[in-house]
Image (cartoon, rainbow, N blue to C red; front, side):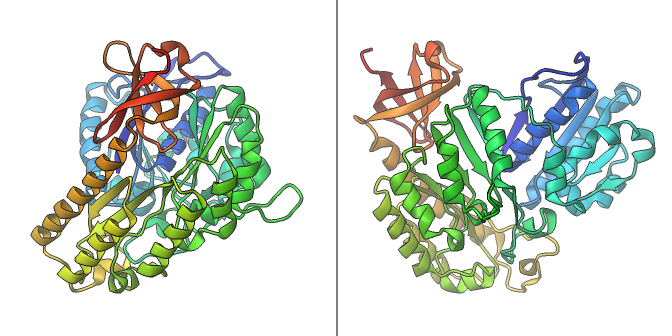
Length: 458
């Protein structure tokens, strides 16, 4: 799980930007997208992004509720913001947005009186309205009791972008109800944006120089938006339409559920060059018994067979995954089944976490909680195997020539950073003039988390 600072570049403002906006983003890529869109809706009010909370007029914490520690980080950050606000005699508006806001709105207001607004993930389009009545809104919780289409219909069409790659939300919510997960309760039921709305936003991004789109959704491959002709479009059909937009050269999507990996989407990976050979497909456990307790609705062999069909269609497909260790009732045998699945699939990258009970979820009430020291030992063993596979995958790229989309300058000297088709970070030198372009790069070394490349002819 990542924690990022979000400060989207300002676009054309209706009024001169004179107020400072700081947004701190926790969690998934969808939160990053939401933070960018919050900046968009506030820009007409004169808010310009800043990269620090100190001196900001409006501070938004866009939160994640997946793990307990993520929620506690929010409360810690709010304590620091309270001190800043008091030092400025209250001249700072503080809002908590996102999934923690939705799940713990009243608790946030009780624990931290410095918070002015609590806004759920389906209501951030109302921020301009709320700011005009901040004094009266203190203590008001604006939740997710709004249809997702109302939010997207209310967002400005113009987006501030920063670089040649962008996120684009196409689906929200989840109907899977995994026993460990709060998403169905904080993001609501699955809903897909109409295809034409997605295509319109994508065209606008392409006009601003975006070359790569990552389609976002809690279960993005469950996408079933209405097509322009009234038919239901699948994610595969949407990807094909996006690939026809001039300037869009790469399409990715995340996060997917194994049960929604339809055959037309697998076929699209074989037939559509713009669809990148990288798939994040969480499995969570390699044990059938634990998968049943998790209410994942798929089995170990089902997942393995699915990976086989995907690799038959696209042999160079890089697979990423999510894993939870220490789920209630997990035995040594269950954990060994997970390690065995990892060895079988051979992941290019993965995210792994110790189980964290989330209030209100079925798993939180299970009586057979695994001791923390046992869970931690399992996590270390799993991560060692996953890191070994990731390093091997990166080193296997040495000697290959990969198309790299250069995105920004690096931190060291003449370094420039881009992304390979497999989502690896690629470092090269003397490529400033190539930022925003996709160029062939010879890979000369592979590290744990990145590749080093040379421009052809260099």
